[in-house]
Length: 232
Ligand code: OAD
Picture (cartoon, rainbow, N blue to C red):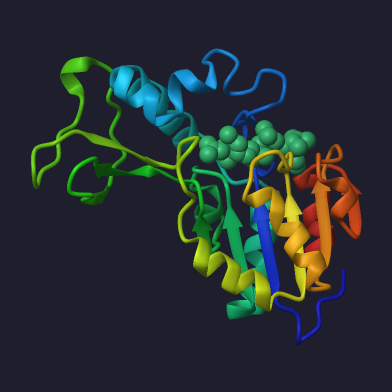
């Protein structure tokens, strides 16, 4: 695709972009939730009922993400950013750090990040790559001594930085969506906002997302197959 000097590109990624790095998607077969029901591990209620189970789950995801490497899809987006600079913005629903490790800089993790934790009481936020896998190992806040939770947006919680996301979305001339099923809002609604503003919209993934009707263009194929050519 040709990118003009006037283009501002807003990219939304989902679990599909990390699939070829070996990280399971949520809803695919063998998906991440298959062994664990969502409400057992990714809700505030689950946290209150069983923080040890929740921390075991996110420790496993930390381990998986650390072992994974960015793929050609992540790298293609980083190369596009290197050309467009401030005119590129990447909003990801993913909590892994593969975009950053591929070289992306303007990355926003709307559903939080695996490698940060925060205090449930004072909100102290800190970088954290530890595994907490037993009740005795559960972390406590260094400032106030209260429990520490993953810095992850759980079901029923509000995604992070929505004002900044909408600011970027409204300024975009192209919205490129990669590897997300279009089933979780508000991210699934970005394409409709783009349509209202007549912003060009493109979806990349091996199958049509639930909100396929809303896209101007659908490119069927995996992130690794499609993105290097699309952004090149
Ligand atoms: P899903 O698991 O719902 O969807 C993954 C999408 O990736 C599907 O549409 C697949 O077709 C596509 N896909 C699979 N392999 C791909 C590949 N190699 N290249 C490109 N696309 C591929 O994951 P998300 O849409 O990211 O939220 O899920 C959205 C949110 O739901 C997650 O952020 C998480 C989850 O519950 C929270 O945890 C708050």
